[in-house]
Length: 152
Image (cartoon, rainbow, N blue to C red; front, side, top):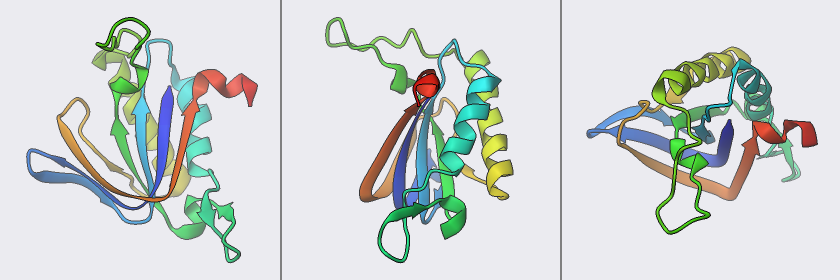
């Protein structure tokens, strides 16, 4: 499972002209699920996201997490995070999980993040053609992969 966290002052997702999710201060999280992923990946990644300390404290240092700043999450499914680009110029997505595997893990991530933060998180629509609008703050962008969890 791979996540790209972008610290934002605002972000929204629109599908067919309708806003499906919108936040102010917080994280836009792009989440990719691959075939090898399980609930164990969700259980490792969700707390890492919820507790990532990249928000400024009174000294301007990145010491605060989402809960400390009353931040929110906009979670967007994104299979293209598993693009393989080694050969040619057309990416391959064979590592990305098919919807029958990816959707339950995406939904499990939503529930895990909501439980950790104690509030609803905003989402896109799995598999839809989504338009994402964001104001990146910093910019601060963190990439996490559950396959690296043994190395951290």
